[in-house]
Length: 260
Image (cartoon, rainbow, N blue to C red; front, side, top):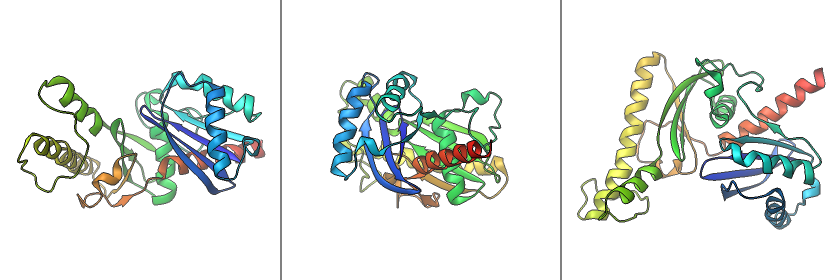
C-alpha cells in the first residue's frame, strides 16, 4: 500500500491508498518536532482503527513546504516501511513543465496541486488553494505550471487583527448573515469573510483578463468549503486535489522506473 503525505505550514494530510483506491485519510497539525517514532505510534493507532497496520505500507510519497519535517518523515519511511520515500520537488515530477523564471521557487504543494487538478479537470485552470496562504495557481492547457498569485490566508488576516489591535477579540471564521456588522464581532467576521470573497473574485477576474483565455476555477484547501455558495466565480470545489496529485506522481515515477 502507498502512504501519501502532504505537509503544509499549518496542517498535514496523510492518505493511504490500496492501488488507485483511497483506503483512509487523516489530518493533523503540522509539527516540526514530531519524531519518526512519534509519527509511527500516531499512525499505527489510526491505521488500526481503519483495519490496517504499518506492515501494510510498502511505498511512500511526500510533499512538504516545511523542510524541518522532512528528516523525521524520511526516517519514518525507512524505519517502519522499509522503503526510501519519494520526495516531490520541482525537478523530479514527470510531465510537468514549470514555466516560471526560477523553477526552484515553485512550492511542492503548488506543483502537486497542478498535477491533481489537471488530471481531474483539464486546463487551463486557476487553482485556488486556501490554507495558511491563499494561492492562485495557473495551470496551462497542457498541464504546465505557469505561475500565480500568493496572498495571506484568511486565518493569518484574522490573527493579525487580534494581535495588532488591543481591543479586537479573537473570533471564529463564519459566514455572517449581513455585510454590515451590528457589533465588533459581526464587523470583524464580515470584514474577514466578505473581504476574502472579494479578494478571490477580484484576483480571478484580473487573472482571466491578463491570461486572455477561458479558464475554469477550482477551489481546494482546508477552508475552501467555507466559501461554497458565497460566490459563483468558483466553478468546482475539490478537496482531494493534493492527495490525488501525490498518487498520480507516484504512478508516473513507478511507470518511468519500470521502463528503464
